[in-house]
Amino acid sequence: SWGLAIAANGKIICKKSVGKISDAREEDFTRLVGASAIGHTRWATHGGVSERNTHPHMSADGTIAVVHNGIIENYQTLKDSLIKKYGKKLFRSETDTEVIPHLISDAFKKNNSFEAACAAAARKLKGRFAFVALHGASGALFAVRDGSPLVLGNGGSEWYAASDVAALLDYTKKIYFLENGEYALLNIREPARFANFNTGKELTKKAVPITWTKQSASKGGHAHYMLKEILEQKETISATLSVSEKDIAKAVTLIKSASKIFMTACGTAGHMCMGGEYFFIEKVSRATPFVAASEFHKLAPFVDNKTLLITVTQSGETADLLEAITTAKERGAKVLSLVNVRNSSVEREFHKGGKFPARASYLSRVRACGR
Image 1 (spheres, rainbow, N blue to C red):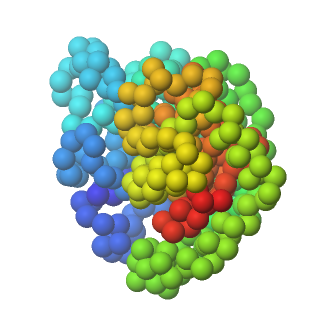
Image 2 (cartoon, rainbow, N blue to C red):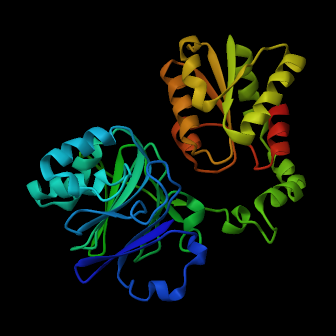
C-alpha cells in the first residue's frame, strides 16, 4: 500500500491506496499540489494491508500527518494512555505508527510549538524508528532518526528526506546523515535546523557529497537484480580485490589478536558467513561460529574485550545487524565489517577507519572473506 500527504493552503490533503505505487494513475495526483509533502510505501508489521492502516497517519484534527519506519515497542502502553485521555474513537487504524501523530498533537496543545511537540513525542517512543511529521498550518517537516535509517538531501531551495541515499540521487548529491537521536526541522521560510531530541542541543551538519550514481544501484537494463548481480560478478569481484594492503593488514591483526571470533549477518550474507566458518577452520585453524544477527543477543554473555565480531552486510542498515554490533561494542569487542554501501550506518557509526567493500553478489562476498 502507499500514501501521500501534502500541505496546501494551511491544510493537509491525504491520498492513500492499497496496491503498488506503480499501479497509480496520473489522475490520482491532480489534487495533490503544495510546497511540502510526505509519502510512504508500506510492508505491514502491525495491522493488515488496508487503506486505514496505510501511512501517512493523521492527528484527530487533521493538522499533523506522519510517515514512519521501524517498530514502536511501547506503542500499546502509549495507545492505552491516549485512549484513556481522549477515548477509543481517537484511533482509526491497527498500526503502531498512529500513536505518533496523536502524541505530537497532544504535546502541541501544551506549548503551541510544532518542533517542541515532535521532539517531546520522540522522547516517549521506545524501539528503533525514524519518522517524518508534516504540519499542515506551516508546511514544516520534522524528520527524526533513532535506530532506523533516515537521510536528508538538499537541492538548493528544496529539501528531501528518505530512508536510503539511492532514493535522492535523481534530485541531489548533497546528503546530510542524521545519527541516532537527531532531527531536522525543515521549513520553506527558514534555514534547516538540526538538533538532538533528547538534549535539545542544536547541531551543525555538513553535507556529504555522493560520488556514486543511481545507475550503479539500479537494475541497469536487466530483468531483475539477481540477474544483474550474476552478470556483473566480474566487475564486482575486481572492485572487491581493490582493498588496500593497509586495510588487509588491519584485518589480519584483528583476527590474530582475538581470542574468540564470531560471525553475524542476515539473509544471503549469512550464507556467506556459513562458508566462512569452513574457510577459517581450513586456512587458519580457527573456530568462527556464525549466528544470525537476530539471534546474536544469545551470544552476548560470551562476548568480551578479546572478542572479534565479523559482520557482512549489503545495505549497512539492517536493524538486527546494527543491534548485534552495538551489543558487541558495549561488551568491548572489536568489529570487522564487509559492507557494500558507502556512508551506510555500519560505516559511519562503527567504522571510522578501514572496512572492506563487499559488493552485492554472493561470490564477491566470498572472495572478500577469502582476502
